[in-house]
Image 1 (cartoon, rainbow, N blue to C red):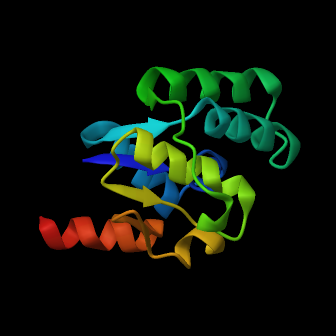
Image 2: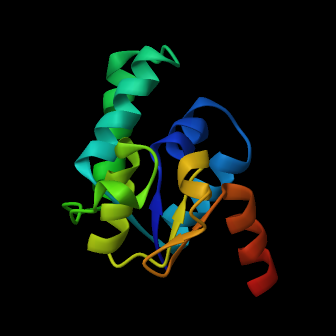
Image 3: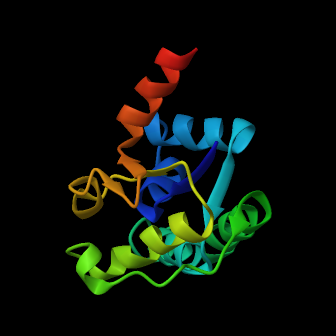
Length: 134
């Protein structure tokens, strides 16, 4: 399965133990993660600014994400695709990476439900979907 993981889920995974961490670990071990450089940069910046992670640690997280994920150049998405222009990159990453789904905690994206046939789901919904499959 090819998945785009939004920055908010990645940040939560590194900031605390819980569902986001378990979801990211599962994706790393058994799925192809699709990211853009912008998503990686957003994770690093927010870890430093909002979570107060040391810059060297945040940079290590960024390097790990780049080595673990497939980094794509986001396909251009029309501004009308979603309410928050910052989310266009996530949608574009999903298109460029031919993702099977987008995992996010962002309400503006979750409201869409899907984009161009790509399901958009919360970490909880994703986790429960996988449990049903196994």
